Image 1 (cartoon, rainbow, N blue to C red):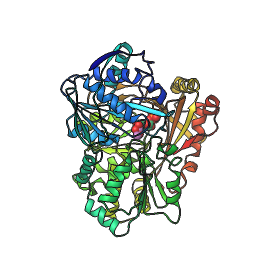
Image 2 (image 1 turned 120 degrees about the vertical axis):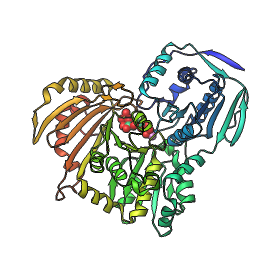
Image 3 (image 1 turned 180 degrees about the horizontal axis):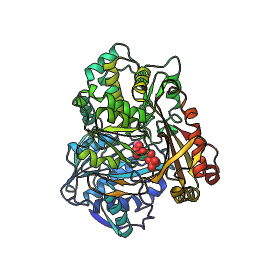
Image 4 (image 1 turned 90 degrees about the vertical axis):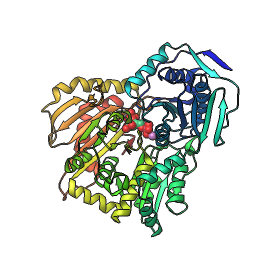
Length: 542
Ligand code: VG1
Ligand code: CO
């Protein structure tokens, strides 16, 4: 039976960088999730008779919402829903399924790196038929629909067993429950030299992969241990838990500290990696060396041709604006175009669809390629493994050789979390207002060359995205960027991105925070971080 039900007024917080993210109790209000899902469906032209993919990162409320999406899809004319078993699909695996099964789109249930549990975060995101996050014009349309909608449609009755692989019917709609790993693992086999990686593990190469009790556990067990022969126990925290074991599934040096400490100890294996809640990010640590995501992007781009899927070379490279310019140096040397986009994977979609770029990356530990339309944590790990299997050198040696060849972009991000929203907005407002006066200003040894706010002109569809972060460029190529996070669910998070280029082998191996000290001081002076936020130090340094 199909019911039409009145929605509740939507409280109108605009979906941010990655869809709608809120605390679980917000999504549990009767009619709330329904309102957003119906608004998504209303914005899908041609949904009658089409296929929809649904799944998420396994966090609390994932399964309930997967069932809700299926029931609403049945009442909204879809012919088929493909769901991951138990409602599980990593973000890149969902992107792959949308593409492979020519679905009209997909709904991904995740709050990525944010904590999970009954009082923690949940999220709903819509991806379009190319497998990528909906572009801004679509998310804007969905948002305005939430403001006018008064009813949603849902199919009652009928049993949905998400635990069992196979086909079932809900009214006229078919529900197909799939193994979340199989298609993704098959895709990875087409890109990487599994034989070479298997031989490397067989010869004693050791690694640790921390799945952070999030979605990548089943993927990593199957690919690393079962197919590539890594020792049992390589994958730790490999079972997805609704509350991620009480941790933040954020693969950074604070939340993946255990892995970091191991990799810096005398007992370190050859390679360490971790992924986030929904499996789209990666943390890469070699024995005795943390590889910053910006450096990792540059290194992967420079060495990608060593993997079969990229043997023909790259079409181009794209990075988000706050990501360091390390990749630019690789692009220049290889004679490739380099694109600078706003933060958020949705901005890479057009470039990838148009064949202008092959590899993309963000400083926040997201790297990916044209194999799907999302960033992909395990993909990055496998590309690293493929490179290591071919070069047969330790990670540290590869990274240091890269710096010697290209120079080093010393880089760090400082996050101030849970800042009062008014204070954070005031900081950004004052900073914006000061931009016109900053050119030529001297702070210590630094001279400001330009100061502006980044706006992006999409070279494919001509759309313009404004207010994408304040950037202050110093003479000599050092830089500080300020922006507010679009993925938080309480208060504001101020992100400060700091960068200095060092081409001198006498100094480039120095410690990062020390190398950036004068830029850190200048950042506070320019933005009044302590004055506005009352904080004297960031909460997270990566
Ligand atoms: C953060 C990162 C950004 C990333 C986004 C989604 O956004 O900075 O690079 O694309 O999270 O990542 P923000 O607005 O908080 O800075 V996740 O892994 O949703 O999937
Ligand atoms: Co994520």
